[in-house]
Image 1: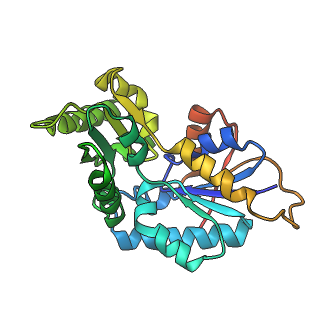
Image 2: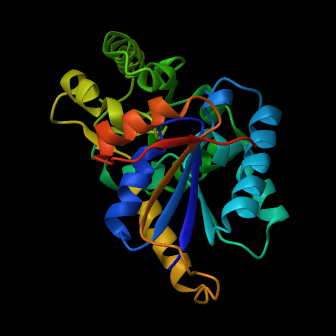
Length: 271
């Protein structure tokens, strides 16, 4: 039995947890929403990195997790290299905007990316984008849009705000088509955004492919867990989910029930 820690600034990482549960239902998951410090996308790189290190230490110390999934694009972009340097013997899986799968899907060569400001302004994202644009055998362009406020609206399940912001940011991406082919692939570069997929689909139409990161992250996590030795201290660990929040745990529990069908009480956790 393996125990996997999963964390995000809020409820967005539940989209990754959904994929993990589908891929590995036999594991136990400890999901932490850093609700007291959300959203990450508009915080400084130093603040995000500090929270990522504190959460990682807390999950390792209190729950003895076998692996960690950083289910947040912003935290991955700003903190995962430091986390891996601090815990070199321990598997840490991150998420990043699915630019490579999108590059394989696009027919026009023009890919839109919706992400947080922290992600699109990070060095890690810039390196990924430049590597793909420069290494493609055919013309390829990524138009990036920082979606301030969208993750927070999804946290609050504010339908009106979600619709307004999705419309605003999709129109901003469409405006980037001047002198470029039409966008035919849209990357959801924040783990919150799959929970706005219905609103986005109504705007972009059926001809634009939506790409998210949950399934590839789940497959990668399964692969690294297979290489780990069996736990010698696994008594009392059962398949399922523990929900933790550094803020009010009730919104997390409601979101897990609404989107994942989980009937699990949330617990407050300080780290």
